[in-house]
Image 1: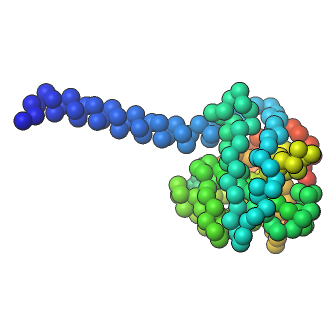
Image 2 (image 1 turned 180 degrees about the horizontal axis):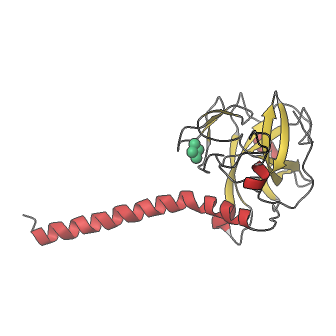
Image 3 (image 1 turned 180 degrees about the vertical axis):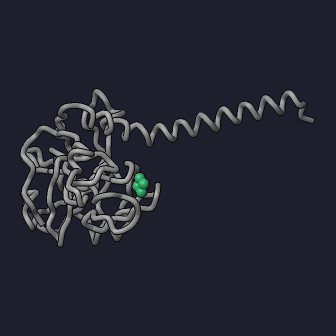
Amino acid sequence: MTSPTNGSTRRRFLSVVTVGAGAAIGGAVAVPAAGYTLASATEATSFRPVSLGPAARFTSESGFDPAPAPYVEDPAQPLVSSGLAYVHHTGRANRDWLAPDAMFVVFSNRCTHVGCPAQATGIGFGCPCHGSQFDQQGARIAGPAVRPLDRFQWEIRRDGNLWITNRWSVLIDGGKVRYFPVKAPGQPLEGQLPWATADILYPAVTYSSGPVPGAAS
Ligand code: FES
């Protein structure tokens, strides 16, 4: 028979384990978001180009089945610089990432609501946290997300690897993609607010590498 003391000790132990597990799960979700938030508080943050591995690894997609590609932007700070890109092979061959027939579209999996990891669903992307849904272009079609999924600028380098070299927030209008300096989750873009003050209320995370690209489809 279990003594009251043993029962109470076990309950306390289970309670500590449960709280600890909850904190660990919360931390796993919160750390990338924290990194993003910290980045937004800095003057400028350069996106460090990072290889996703051999480009050939991403060319066998059939239908819409983008390949998850984990990356660590800064090996010295893996907790705040790791992320997951989704590489969609369009079936085309152009290596210019902005070309209408670009061979890849590389999405960020960070949901633009509050930053949970969105997942490819076969018809687009879905976020398990609060139900945001995105189509195959990453445009929001349902849920509380405030804008499309961010995208990565990419290039195939001489080593044959697919590199992501910058990150952009986007608006998609009739298939045309407009690029903006990247914003944190929850922050709308200029053009989404009637009073056009999104940049004042929600200053972008300032990635300092290169000019904002023009519209592309
Ligand atoms: S974080 Fe994705 S819907 Fe809330």
